[in-house]
Amino acid sequence: MNDKPMTDAPTNQITTKTEARTGGVVASFLPKTLDDAFRLAKALSMSGDMVPQHFQGKPEMTMAAIIRGMEIGLSPMQALSNIAVINGRACLWGDCLPALMQRAGHSIDVDVTGEGDKMVATATLTRGDTGQKLVRTFSVTDAKKASLWDKKGPWQQYPKRMLGHRARAWAVRDGASDALMGLQIAEETSDYQHRTRDVTPEAQSGWAQRAQEARKPAPVKETPHDPETGEVEDAQEVEDAQEVHWTEGVAWDEGSPGSDTWDEGVEALKQGAPVTDCPHETDMEAAKDWLGGYHGAKRASE
Image (cartoon, rainbow, N blue to C red):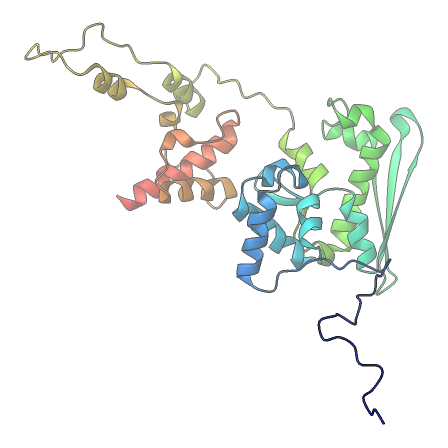
């Protein structure tokens, strides 16, 4: 009698199959260590248009955004899509705001009433933990006082939407700042940054005049030579010595110590950058802070 089992399978065959599954929730990838976070940031910063342009090729900035987003419960890709740096401040774009409120258990409702100059946006925040309601309004009159109503762009194209965004931002900032953890609102910060102001240097004494004068090129000798010996000098050396950049018109103590832009100037000096690398040539106030920090740090190191 043959006792050998009839169910023996050849040893060179795979007897199990992977079950195909569909549906389900895809979990976000979350780095668990600092090294994981940096590797992820580096990969995402090199992913082209999959991330916003201001993060492309900047792994350190990308990593900072990922960590900042994780502090308020955003996954890495959510953070890169919804966090922007405006005027040195990390800000949230509008559509992320109600999502954060819902995740925190709160609700935010916005209603715009009236027409024309009588329009008023009313935002009502209801906290999920206490049931407390907080109401904030923003009207056309408020927009005119803030010099926003006649500004080109979204305020002209989508006035009701912009009124609603501003009322909602105020309600969230006042009633649920614990969910924002210090993050600013992008639409609000952008309005502050681009508010129209006259930056034309006045024909008077002061920083504006010195900066304007410093921009003027110094006269160049037609035949560079030593006035004492008559010896011809190196033309490039003479040109370098005569070059005066507009940044030299700023005194070290004209900025606002402690501001983010001031700290950027200090850091630039530490990194060995020349003063002509000031990135705020078109924004006089920001330039004054940056150069104040730069010159102040240089003065302190001497």
